[in-house]
Structure formats: structure tokens, C-alpha cells
Image 1 (cartoon, one colour):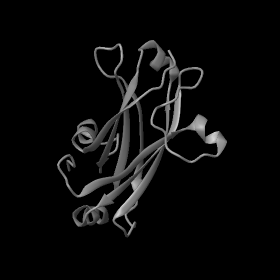
Image 2 (cartoon, helix red, strand yellow):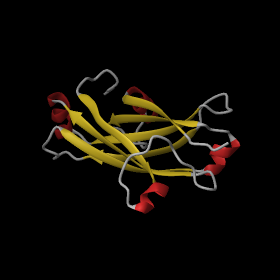
Image 3 (spheres, one colour):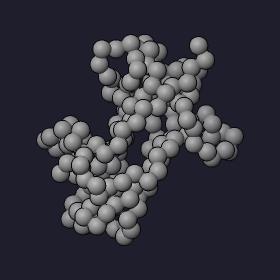
Image 4 (cartoon, helix red, strand yellow):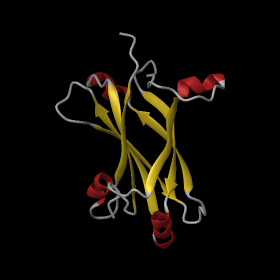
Length: 156
């Protein structure tokens, strides 16, 4: 099922925190991705979703997954590079209209430096397919309900 035009899933919150900022015990979200000395990115991304009645019914009959896909954006490349994909199941018995998800994301510094990647494109998708199913790639694209670009901080 394609969720692209489904108004029954809404993003209530989207934020991230660089892991290098977590050492101070501060629990606030960041506005830019901060690379480590080797150029790699390590951060936690959190989101909260609200589900309408239609999608709550779908949860009862099938197993659904939320996917975070990370792609290159603003880089010295002709096309985009797939950098990371993290997913998790959506519990069938959430019993509420809200669902929160957290993702640990790592992007290799070699890819960032070699391709002069200056920002990342984030896509959130919900589908009942896994990477073992036929049509997985198109299901992820068709079920994308949120996209945003976040810059990588640079002191150059």
C-alpha cells in the first residue's frame, strides 16, 4: 500500500542530536549535523507519528515497519549516494494514535569527505514490506511520507 497520499499518518515531531553533544548530559536537539574528527556522522534521530483510524485498522491485520533512509544531498556528485537505512517494526498493540521511534544513525566519514557531501536528505517511509520482499525498493519510495534536508556543519 502506498502511503504517499495517505493523510492518515502525520509527523508530530522530528529531531536529532549529535552523539558528540550527548556527553555533556544536555538533551536538546541540534540544527546541524556535526562531523567527528574523521568526518563521520553519528547521531540519534527521533520522531513521533500520529495515526488515524484507517491506519490503526491496518496495524491490526499486518506487520508494518517504519524506515529512515539517508541519502547524500548537495555534493560533488551527479547523483545521490545511499548512505544508511534504519528500520523498526511498528507494534500492533500500541493502542494509541501516537507512536515514537528512535534511530541510531552512522554515516562513514570517507564517503562524506571523498564526495564533498554538504547535507543529507532524510526520508521516512511506512510499509508492510521488508528487504526480503519483491518490490521493496518501490514500496519504500511510494510509502515515503516525509522528506527533509539537514546541513552538515563545516568550519572551512
